[in-house]
Length: 568
Image (cartoon, rainbow, N blue to C red; front, top):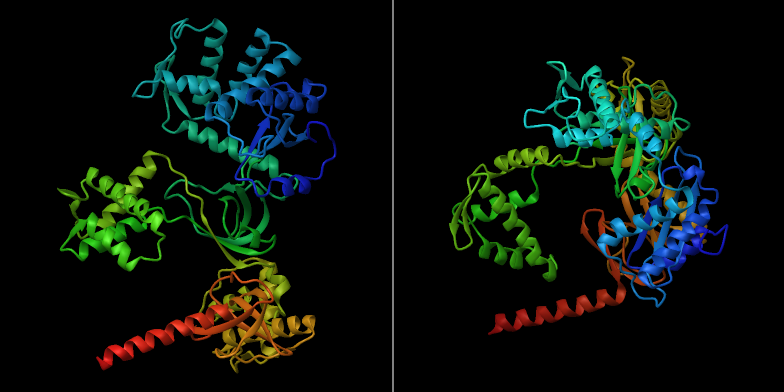
């Protein structure tokens, strides 16, 4: 719905604002929202007052969710004002102004919270398995020794009721192992107890969200995003979706091949859309230990007798890294200078003056240690990397005419690795093994052992290209030609397809369709004339035919210049 209409289609609003520079998203979730009789009218009134503050009409859509503990609305505001110019909101207004308007209207509808309501809310926090306002108050009161003394009747100038619930919270933390009471009335908080509470709350929220989507959540673990705590997991995808209702962050649920289920936040992983339920993935912790900056600093220093020189690095970028856009070269260099300053501050480099620094031979190892300490101190979080092992369920791939995860696993088994315990995968492996034998890609030896042909992976890759080529050719009413494209011929570009072996350009010449493996998705429109050049064995570069002619003319011109120089 929006200001006047109900039952809107999300696609219509998407088309309206898809080219906007930005947009604004928010959740309106007032306390006692379930007591607001017409929540949509509440949302409309909030936006109306925001329009008054901003002095412009807004384009927006919203949806109300009643199926959660707290009734709430999701609102998206288009990033254009009534004149079609970029809509600008100050940071303070986004953070506090809109909230104030939402609170103001909720108070008008529901009235001020009574003292009794406030007290009941505090009482619910006493044994809550999450970080509460009481915990935040405790955090402000504890000293360096993490202790808080509540032996007096009035310790912090608060009401008797507040003092009572605060003591109740401390007793609960002590009974849960997150604090120690000694002597009576003096509590020492365990270091990181708020992190423990946050982890418990996250797990409970996740289980609540997944309850109807995934079975058997008793052993569910939340994948740690803390530096140095993540682990490598290979397993089957049980579920995927948005990690929260406001951002583009995503999650997957993975059942490890070695047992156990894991809820894995994956941020905005570039290959998330390729992940399918029942497919197989590998989750790897992000390598946060050190960045490329330390390697680059070491490289420049190695070329200059152990001294990193800013001007020499600037010259190196211009000469050896000319592919970096000129407008980002200086910020790129400044990021290295900032890293150098961090190394100097941690005694891993010595400033010599005039933009020069003495760099030790082991700067990369020292850099790793420094990064680890900084990450731990600042409690940094790192989303893991995601590798697609099998985009589809292996059970559906037993007769696939292409290289699959099953083939790689069978090869590992031939080398003695039998780590799979999943019965369904075990059966799929047996079926794939028989299919390979039936298609003369493997054999059962006289001693009963299974053996794959040395060329099996290459043969399967060739089969995949042939199958895809024949399918696309039939679809286009053409004949598939499985030979290499020729570098001296022009073709009509038909598009590209992604196979296990990578990206393949699809092109037509006459009545024949041919395919060529390329290193990246081409920025060429379908129907254009193109030419190919082989940049390494089996890998081609594709360019528009006119662009190729221009390059040929330039090459020819360079050749004549070279000849003239030789004659002189």
